[in-house]
Image (cartoon, rainbow, N blue to C red; front, side, top):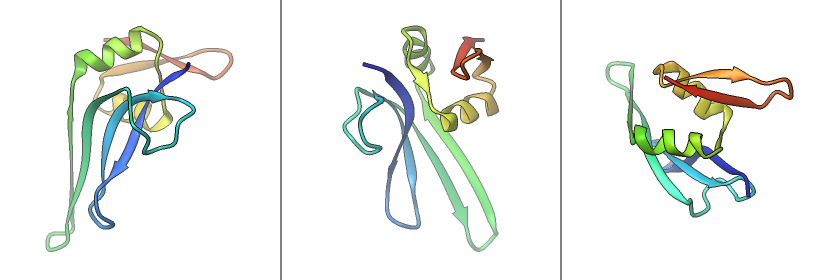
Length: 101
């Protein structure tokens, strides 16, 4: 069973938010996860034309899942590197593993 760290989309049409989850890699996007690791929100203020992003997550649990071999999705990799949480180490077969900071 390959465990992936990826996003699960929730919320109404114009106000989406994403749960960061550890889930079996063969299940659909919104299936029941093994564990919910955090929440990623993008809020758009139409009056100010301003977008704010917030991330609430458990760093210890994400590190645990990466240590036991969970593979993050491309979107999760992008989010982790934007906040300097982990740096990708590219392997020859184009699977990205992570070295924890």
